[in-house]
Amino acid sequence: MTQRNGTAATVRRIVLRATAVLATTALAAGCGVGDASEGAGPAPAPSADPKAALLAAVPTEQDPAFRFSAQDGTDRWIGVVDPAAKGIDLGMKQQNDDPKFTMDMTFRLIDENLWMRVKLTGIPGLHDMLKLPKTWMTVDRARLADASSVPVFQGADPGNTAAIIRTAETVEDRGDGTYTGLADLADNDDVKSTFDGVDLAALDAAGKKVPFTAVVGADGNLTSLTLDVPAAGKHKAMKLVTKYYDYGKAPRVAPPAGAKAAPSSAYEMLNG
Image (cartoon, rainbow, N blue to C red; front, side, top):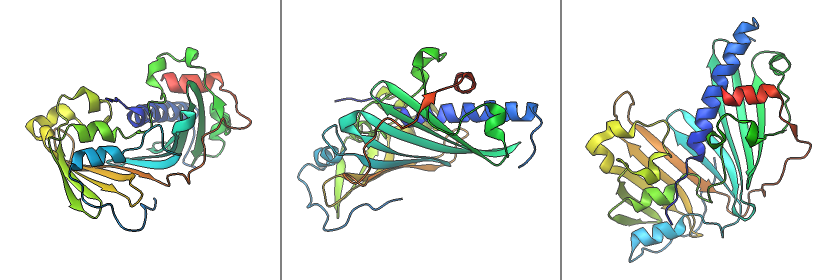
């Protein structure tokens, strides 16, 4: 099944936009400066069809809840996926220099329901000044300028690893649960929305053969996928790393207790 999953990229855009909005508001108000285990035990035996074996290791809706992280250059997301509940927690931290503060934004989704929590540090009283509660807020998608700009549950593979693996003509089984291949990221609609921080068009021909390394744990589950993206345009060479771990050990994703309706200030921030 082809899946387009840009959940992490969507949150990156929201967080960066929200940070800019908060920084402008804080300046106007005159504010001053105020991983994971990848499994143990013997690795899977080499497969006669490495690509099929690797795709079979990608998490699906039948898997238990698990944790994940995604590293895109200097940006990092962390979260939990609960396929049975169609739920996901997704968080990202962003620092602002002028004025100096840190915003930690977390989204929780269960099917079509959406909650948000924002934690601001570095400037005393910033939450009160911006009229943003520190607790979970229920977000009404109807009040968003562009409802498609916020995350939705798009399946059990938030890093879109299956779509990336499918672009490879061949995959090699290196043994010890390690697989390598060349991903075709050029003009590929199935993976384009995954990489908000990468200029895929600037990769040109190099984008058709981007090296990747995947690791499958002893339990047969994918634990990591690393793309070695070459320098292109204004972007330096970088590693894009997705990790899945704690299968069956991560907490279930449930509606947050005590959540209150998001105030107008939250929608102003989200709508930019």
